[in-house]
Image (tube, rainbow, N blue to C red; front, side):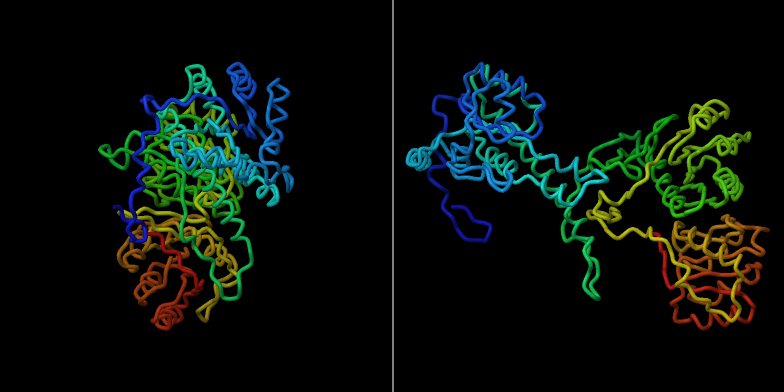
Length: 555
C-alpha cells in the first residue's frame, strides 16, 4: 500500500510488476515508425537519409512533411492518421487521440494493447520534435505581442512530454544535436532503455526551460496592464530562474571560498553582458565593486564617473565631459581611489584615458559602455599597470528583465526580492522645509548629492561640492556618526558644501555638526517624529533644508 498526495491510501497497481522486456535485458526497442515535427530544420537531410535507409515509416505535419518529401522521403500526413485536417492556421495538428495513444501506449499491458487494436492505432517508436523558437523571437527588441503569442508551442511540448513520460517504450529526440546518436542507435537495432531515459531527461529539461521563458515573458506582458485604483503591483508568488555559469572565478571574497558568476540564461544586460577587453581575470570582489560603480554612474543623465572601493563610492562626479568627470572623481579621495574600480557612463575616449596616466596611480577595473581604440591603446601600453588593468564594456538595457523586474539578495537559506531602487528622484516633488530656501545653484548640488547618497551603505551621508563627492560617511550604526565621518573625510572642502542623508535625522545633533562645519544646505527625506526640532535647528542657524519624502536605504 502507498499513500497518495492527498493522504488517501492507494493499492500499488499489480501490473507494475510485469517485466516489460522479457528476454531483452537492455530494453531494446527497434525503430520502425516515428513522428517528426520540427521547426528547426538543421540536420534534417542526414536524418531523412538515415530513416529512409533503415526503412522507418515516417508520419509528419505541415512544413516538416513538405521538407522531408523534398528530400525524397515517403511521409504519411498526420491528418490522414487522425482523419481530421490541420485547423486554426496550424494551431491544431497533432492534438488527437490517434496520435497521443500511439505515443503513450504501454506495450506490456494487455488493456493498452486492446485499446490500440480496437481503434486500429499504430504505435510510435520515437518522437522527433523541436519547438517553436519562442525565446529567440521574444527577446528581439521589435517583437510584437502577436508574434510572441503565436510562437508559444502547444502540440510540440505536449508530444515531447508524452514521449518522455512513456520512455519505457518511446524515444524522444528534442534537439538536432541528438540526431547523430539517434541515427547510430537505429543502425545498432534500436534504442535501449538507458538511451531513452537519457533522452527523456533532456526532453523534460527542455520543456521546463521553455515554459520558464514563456512564464517570464507573460509576467512582463501582464505587468504592463493598468492597475485598478489603489492596487499595488505585486511581486510574483512563484518564479524560476535558469542560471548558467558564465565565469568561473579564482575564489570568492577570500581565497578559501570557491566562486563563479552565474547569469540568467540568455541574459546580456548589466553584468550578464560584460565583455572584457584586456587584463587579468575578474575576481568576485571586482564584480561586486563593478556592480556598485555601474549602478551609480548609470543613474546620471549627464556625463558621470564613479570610483568604488569595497562596494562604496569614494569618488563621484558629473561634468560636461567624461574626462572632466573622471578627473574630478579621482581627485575626491586619491588615497581610497588607489586600487579601485572606475565606471564612466559615456564611451571612454582618449582624453578620458589620459586622466589615468599620472604616475603612481593604479586601478583594478575600468568600465564603460564602450572604449575608443586610442583609449584602449593608451591604457594597455602607457601606465605601469598596463598588463593588469581590466577594461570592461557594459551594454545598455534593463538588467532586471531577466529576474522578473526584481533585485535579488541571498540570505542564509533564502532569497530576498524587491523592486530595484533605480527610478530617478523627481525634484518637483521636493519641498523646502526651512524658512530659508537654497538658491538655484545649491539646489542642483543638492540633487547631485541625493543621487550619490543612494549608493552609499546605510546609515549614509554624502558631502558634495559642485557636482563632486568630497566626503562620505557610510555603514555607520548611528546617523550622527555618519555625519561626523563624512565631514572629517571632506576636510577643508566641507565649508560651503552641501550634505545629503539617505534617511531622516532622528535628532538635531546632526544639523548642529553640519552648521559647525560650514555646510551650506542639507537634503534629507524627512519623516522623523522630531522633524520640527530639526527644522528649528536649521532655521536658528540660517541653514536651508529640503525634504524629499523618499528614503534610500542601502543595506
